[in-house]
Figure (cartoon, rainbow, N blue to C red):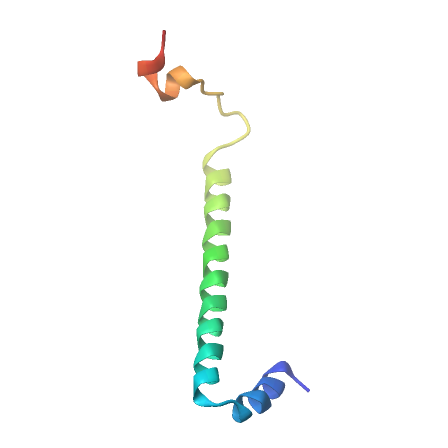
Amino acid sequence: MASRDLLEGILQSLPENRLREVLDFARFLSIQDDHEDWQEFGRRQLAHAFGEDEPEYGLADIRPELES
């Protein structure tokens, strides 16, 4: 039996307040998946923008006011 079928059977027996909790959790999982997708997209874009031959930047390059 598929997970959706099993879930449907369980959902039919739950009271409305529990259904709202299940809905909230499903939304949380959806947002979490979306967040992970965006993180992976960002990592790929960063890897694409910066190659292996990038120079090493020192603190003075980043914060010139700290240069002594």
